[in-house]
Length: 113
Image 1 (cartoon, rainbow, N blue to C red):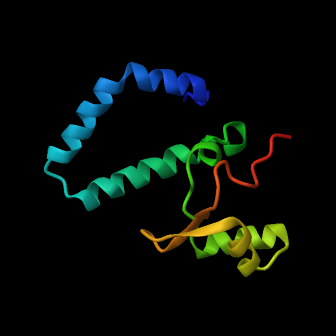
Image 2: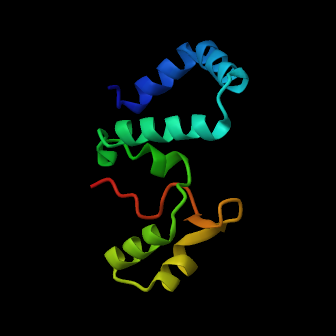
């Protein structure tokens, strides 16, 4: 499995047409969107469990991951601060999902030690 972010970007550009064709296929196939989502989530769990996030950290650099209530509690505990302080200082509400995301990119806790 490729984990080098520069190589992944390169492959993405090389396969852009193929990726668009696949997305078009997904929109036109017989499966309901919930079934496709279920398949994607299952594949995500299988693949993401093989990746050590500390070797890449690209999600923390490029996107704002959505944090559910359990995530915010664990993060606050790990930082030794109340959940309310974590939310006030570092998070914003994602109105679409009703959950939280970090208030800036990259993640304020991303460190390169």
